[in-house]
Image (cartoon, rainbow over the protein chains, first blue to last red):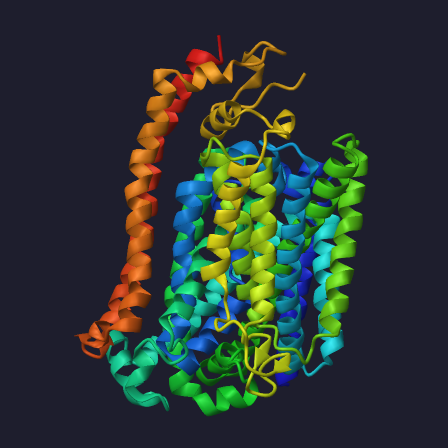
Length: 516
Length: 110
């Protein structure tokens, strides 16, 4: 019976999203349709889609679990991931929309025509997408296995086939609407649980804090910072990655090309910030509620990282029906995020590498769409294979690693392309590669990979680099490489650069040269 | 943002160097920078003060309202800050839009 309700709701989610895809497929003929939904989304639509694209399983299941097990320290992710949008809004969204076309690399390519610049940007996009996707797929596999009792590999395949179907047939239109539907479902689910938690506390917000002092094994420390983050430097490093990384995530940046102009890009951030902000405030209720009414022991028994806290809380408060609904919300959450990731990975391969680097922009509309579809399948198949082999690995750190790479390898180049007159080709390539390599190497030497506790990471031993998230070193490295690269290089790539005057004018005004 | 290629004669490249050195364009860039910079500085200082205060001091561990500590009050005020700053940005950006329209009218659409 339990399973029956779950399966029914899961099938409903699958049916609804396939319906959307069928409808979207009919409107997807050009490359612009495929990558940007023809730039046709309104501010609120794109705002909801940004929320749907952004709020991943790490936000919904991860933060709820982290707060329930570690108190305030879990909430740092909520703070960092929301405030990141100030950087996006004030510094990046509008110039990005004004300069770019389909991808983040387009925006950088609007100034630096050299193929190696676009190649480096595409490489970063693909790396970020793969890490982020692996975390989502492994999480999805574990979740569905737990909820429906089906094998891990079948679960991964279901998610994999769904995400490929959306992107392959419905491109950005289907992806956007799946994300919008997901945002609505996620907000409904979260608001219902939060309401029920508050009801249990007689709508006394402060009383809830009083109760939490004695509700967990941590006692009063539950309400303070410091259960996980004993070292403030490690914490600052995480916050740097979260706050700057958002502005460099390819699948989020790509969303700004789905609206018609910078004004609409701006208003979509406002809608997104309200939805995302309200969601993250509500993570307090999810976390506190799970700690109080499910209990740390039961949460850990189900999943050591606490990922099942939110669905379990729903079960305690609202019975099987609500638990099944919340599980379906988690499923939709993952589907919407991985679809966005497939699309942005495909755009880097088909548009940046094939279309712009190999074919030098000389591709027909038909070839572009075909290449995009083939690339979508390739990205999907490759990540499914990786995920199938990664069931037993602890991949949760891959999401914060993706943010760290985005912050270190993409953000310096994006900012300098818009705001620094002297910035040049060598600086851009140096920054993108340095940010990527430093982040990867330091993570490989960190406690996320080498840990003294057996089973906590890939290798047992003393980590060489002390912080799980290396942003505090790798982000400055990305900026420094940009500056040093720019200052020491000769002007040999100047012929392939567009004058800063033109870039600046277009970035500020949205002016585009008329086509032929 | 107010782009309408049809109004402009085809195949005429703008003299970007000249336009970005016009007083009105320089003024726009300066106004934008003067507006954004204080908000960005305030934001980064406010955000990174939180881990410094929680990591090196215990002052945020004191109770603010009942059992809700200043850690939570500080954190929730970061949320309020985001909503307030984005609203201020929205309003201010409208005036920049007008300036951009003026510049495009003057230098692009002839």
